[in-house]
Image (cartoon, rainbow over all chains, first blue to last red):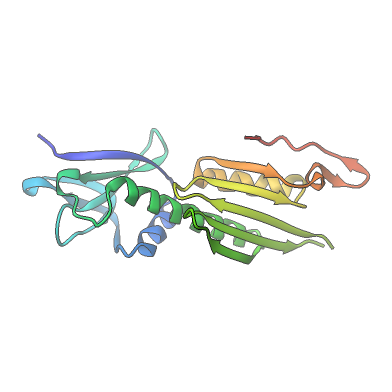
Amino acid sequence: MSHFSTVKTQLRKKEHLKQALLDLGYVPQEGQNLVRGFRGQTVLAEMTVKMNTGGDIGFRWNQGSKSYELVTDLDLWKQSIPVERFLSQLTQRYALNTVLATTAQEGFQIAEEKKNIDGSIELVVTRWDS
Amino acid sequence: MPQRTLRFKIRQDGQVEETVEGLVGEACIHLTEKLEAALGSVEQRKSTSEAFLREEVQKQTIPVKNH
């Protein structure tokens, strides 16, 4: 019996997912790699984070939802924060990186970036149009 | 030369709210579409009546979702 759990996410773009993981201090590997779980069980994922203790964390492309889903053995979850908190932190970093990259592509510059008490991030970008 | 300003609030769960100040017409929609392709959904607000106007002589209503 497999111990792996999958969690749906809103993470769609690989490069922003990779940057979000790096922002949170994880070192992701791209390409098909094995995610290790309970008693040597493994599952394939397109982006993986190898863990020294506990199970690995993987992200597997879901063609149906057009997004990456988290795949990990939750019995072996050894991170300092629960998996739900990990995913929301990751999704926030992903969203921030996406907004920064997309607005920069469109010629916007950052005027202000601040973190609010409620944990949200506020970003103001501007562009002069002729 | 108008200055376009966009405000984003990225909530702790990753939900993004976009507020448009003075950005009008197709450029605005184009940007939001690109964001939605990567984020899934973006909540959009218009903070000024400017957002409804393309030029002074031409009036255009922008079909965006309001939440």
